[in-house]
Image 1 (cartoon, one colour):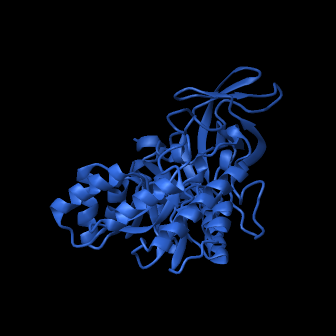
Image 2 (image 1 turned 30 degrees about the vertical axis):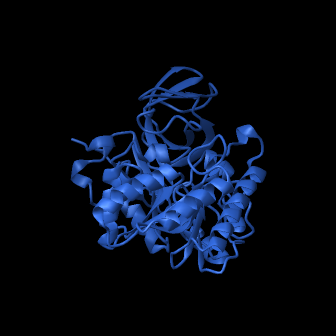
Image 3 (image 1 turned 90 degrees about the horizontal axis):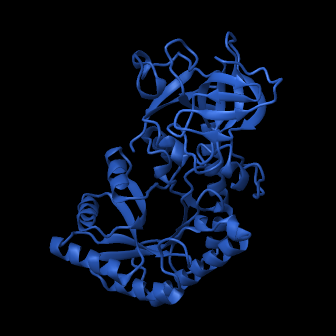
Length: 405
C-alpha cells in the first residue's frame, strides 16, 4: 500500500530509500536539497548585501519544514495571504507573520486581536475607511490590551486591492492613526500584478514604487506612524530587485525596514520565474547570487501510441496548468539505474492525469521510462501535494515534508 501521491507508507519519515525504489508509485514530487540550500543562501546573501529583509510568502509551500529553513537562514518572518493561513503558521511555530491582505471578517479580527495580546507578532492590511470602521467596531467590543498592527496597502489602478492614489492613502492613514485600537506600522504594495501583456513592466513597477515612497514620506511628515520601526514592503518573485533598489531610498526620521515578500525563490522553477527572476536565466543583479530549480515531478511514460506522441502519467491534479506547462528534462530509462539529462521538451497539453509530449519519431523514449519534469509557478504545484520528499543529488530521500493547505 502507498500513501497519497505515491510515497511508501512504511518509508515515510525514514531515509536511505530513493524515489526510484520498488513500492514508489508515480507521479511523485521531489525537492532537490542542493538547490534549496543554494537558493536560500542566495536570498540571504542578497538581502544582507542590500540591507533589506525578507518575509517569504508562505502560501507558496505551506510547509513548516521549509518555513524553518527560511527562518534559520535569516527570514524576518513569514507572509500569509489569509487569516486562516496566519493561524496555521502560528500553530506550526512561526512567531511573526505578515498577512498580505485586508482582514474585514469580525471573527478573524477577533482572533488577530487575541493572538496579538498573547504575544504573536502579526500584521495585516487596510485600504479603506470602511475597513478601518469594521476593525474599530470589532475591537472596541473586545477592549484589547494591544493595538492591532496595520499596514496601509497601496494598489494599482485596474489591479487588486490597495488605495489608488496618495490622497486616498493619506485619508485612510489618518483614520488608522486616530484609532486607539490600531497602530499604523508602514506601507505595503504588490508590484507583481503588473503584466508584460500590457507593455514593459519595469517602468510601471518603478512608477508604482515611487508612489509608495511618496506615501511613506507624507505619512511620516504627519507623524502618523506610531511603531518602533516603519515597514515598507513589496516584492514578489519577479521584480524584487527593483523593489529593493527603490524602497531603500525611503528617507524619513524614523527607523525603517524594507521587507521583500518573494515566495518562489526557495524552489524557483523551469518556467515563468526562470525567465523573470532577477536571479534567473537572465539575471539583472550585479552580485553572484543565482537561483536553481529545486522542484521536480516524476512520472512514468504510459503510452507511445504514435511515433510523435508520448503520454506520461502526470496531469492537472499534480501541477498547476495556468502557467507554462511542465518541462521534461530528465529521464531514467526502464532497466537503468542512472538519471540522464535530456534536451528539454515542453508538455503541449494536460488532462487530469495525462501529459502530452510531442517528440521526434527517432526519440528513444519508451513505455515504462520515468521522466523528471520541471514546473512553472510553484504555488499551484505545492497545493496538489500533502507530502513531498527532499532528496540529494542521487535522489536518496533525506527528509519527508508535509504541507498544510
